[in-house]
Length: 286
Length: 318
Image 1 (tube, each protein chain N blue to C red):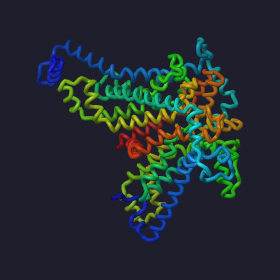
Image 2 (image 1 turned 180 degrees about the horizontal axis):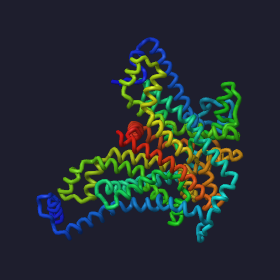
Image 3 (image 1 turned 30 degrees about the vertical axis):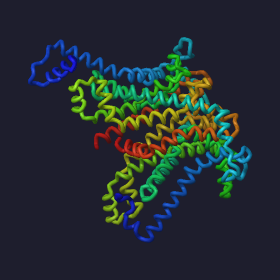
Image 4 (image 1 turned 90 degrees about the horizontal axis):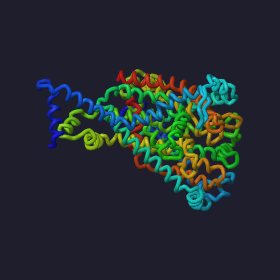
């Protein structure tokens, strides 16, 4: 069953309506393919061309010969395994810290009624008004004072100060029925036990959303890791790509770009239904 | 059942009005313990917010009035940082570029997603394909998008000029020309970020009740009139919200100019955030960087305040 949209089903059923519909449909498929898929195709195949072929004009649509050396060279020459590993460590740690501390804080604010809870929540929500990027310099100085430069903690700890995710969790916890939690308490479960065995299992959907946001944010970030990781060996893939892009062969660079994109794109393709539904739902519900 | 659990159960029952209240001292002690536990749960989050959100916001304002070099004592210098930053020719260029970028991003990056969403909402086939494909660039790391387009804009073997040649159009300097560089970056940012906007519009369009279109059609409204009098008013709130969010996001643009143009040619693409970065990490002038940050903060804070005000009042209406 489909709901009525701008065009009436009757208009679409007419021969003329159907002709217009199918031409618009074909046009949109072509446009989307050209605008969004073709650049990706160009990148993946560009990395497989020979160094001469990739700079040739007019360019070849399909590589004359398929070389995998671009990918293997990128893997070896640009130390991609170590930069990818750095990114994984940074993203996984940020995820873990956020899940532990944001969940605990959101639970406390939602269910444990701390004195000054409203003030704390207000202070957290106020940070939504302060765009993160505008504060990178003083944040950098604080991290430097704490001696955390070139340490993954410089990614992990600031990641916890994520008002958006914390608020998302708190609002979800607010909707959990109080009597279920009270029943657990009467059965002798402590607060931590209640959180672990009752609240968290009931919160799978929101935990999934927060997890994806947390991972994507770290994987995609550039300015912050550029500031805090001056040590080349500690840099995540995004920073390393830019640093190395100056003096490396084009095909090798393109191959490295493809490799850097694979994890997030793969995750998106696996969880696309949830991610797409989440974006739509999160926004219209305010 | 353990003793403590037993006691807690009894206490729970004691809250009921019919029961005799427990001694006042006992209650107070228990309330204290509850508070201690609540703050135990809050502690980790609070420390992180304090260190990496609240303190830096205050610190930005303080350092904006100081001569600050890491490792030595800061000195109060009054408004010297602001006057020095104002006098920098790059300051005017950075603000001009940032505002132009924001405006262009609104013109290009605002109408296109809306039109795309309108069309997608009418298509009854391959829905999943469109949604996945339009969101794909969002999942590509911004650094990769920027490098990819830098390659497309290459004056030699870049795809952008090849496409123009293929269409027998004059070629362009794209990101390498002082006049075209900023627009070229707006195209990159739009390409990379459009997916989210399209999906949000789609969700909003799907929530428009079909009866409204039926009624409008019965009243003889044609397609454009239906868009104007039904679709736009029904999605007005989402449009406004996304516009504000986009303004806030594009005013903090950094990755594209840093990776693609390095702020050039002739400062044509230096943005405010880029200038902040330069003051801190190239000039080692943290006072100047914080003075700039405070200016950006005030401006963006105003936009955020409007945004939060709007979302909150809408939430109360619903």
